[in-house]
Length: 213
Image 1: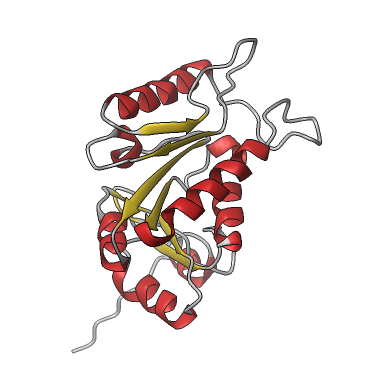
Image 2: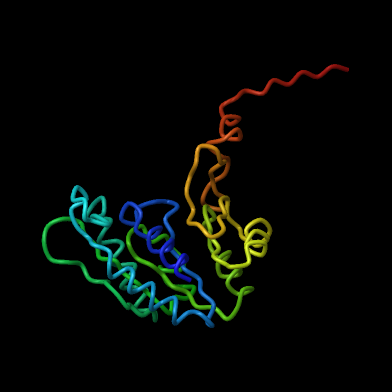
């Protein structure tokens, strides 16, 4: 649980949430949801928003005020449709395109927090009944770049990652990251083809066909 919370919070706040592979939706079985949410909110509260040049800052502003405002509208629309905001969710006073660490619960399909990419420090927590529903919810997306599983049963996590999750990059007990040794890319509306690793190099190679009868 502690590893999952620590990894999920850090992944959500990478580059102030402005990363294609930053964690965005957190799907949690009902049996552990209260404990996860409590720990997650507490950890998010501890993160300091501020000047990115300050060594004590955990996350900085959004790239533009327009993007910050669009993010806020996604939060407001999700709350209007039934999501609950446990942390953040308000534009702070002062200069800069800042948006606070925000946690939404009771997130369901049909809300921007579920259907769209929240490109900022907003976490969408989705509670499900069991493992099978968690997999179905994870795959219920037009995107398919990265997914991560946290479990004590590593073999089960590996099986789910390899066989059941619809994403180009699937990690077990770690948040999704790129590495020049590993092929990187997505499926669905997250694109096609791969960069990095041997497979990425092949994308830049002209393969010659010679046919002899």
